[in-house]
Image (cartoon, helix red, strand yellow):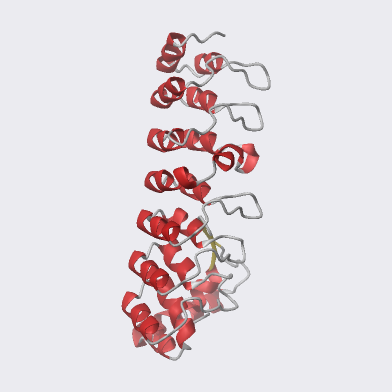
Length: 288
């Protein structure tokens, strides 16, 4: 799927779930850059976007409109009988209309597509599901609607990622609250980010105590360790996150655990000059 008004964007942008990276071809000459800018300005001035959408096949119009948030056009296309599961175009990276809507947080469009029978468990070229895109955008209503329509929160991408990992990475507390209770506990405990960071450790690193609390309510393991043998409590102590340290200790975290080098949580807090954390740790019987 491609329209002339999007040529410059398609040249300069590469879309990936959870992030947007800008790639600027450094070998393009100044003349070509100027030409692209002029063409873009011209297309905006004469309404090329509207023209190109009008001349797209209705199936591709659905994909474009779902990405761009054109609610009225999506509604009209679905009412005219366009398949909500229309196959992606060659440049869509395997993303369906529902994925586009979920990724961009277009709530009304996503709900319309679901009502029309959009597939909730298909996968894009990178292996991501509609639920993963919704977890990335952080729209709780879309997440809940997907789950209600059968989206699998326990689906594992080839790289080992599950939906809740994207909401943790992006700090979407409400979505973590929605996903944690419906995600298998074994996946919450065993899934890993790069460098072997467990979900709870990743949440602690954000410093967001509400994010940590959402995972604690799911009875996630407190002692899961990343590659250096450090636990969530150790990271919280090192980072000076007193509130998180207190939550973890109240939940039963091992205050005297040691990392792979034999260093205790208390030692980490002392070295980091985390005075308030040191006091809390000692109240719970921490030793060096």
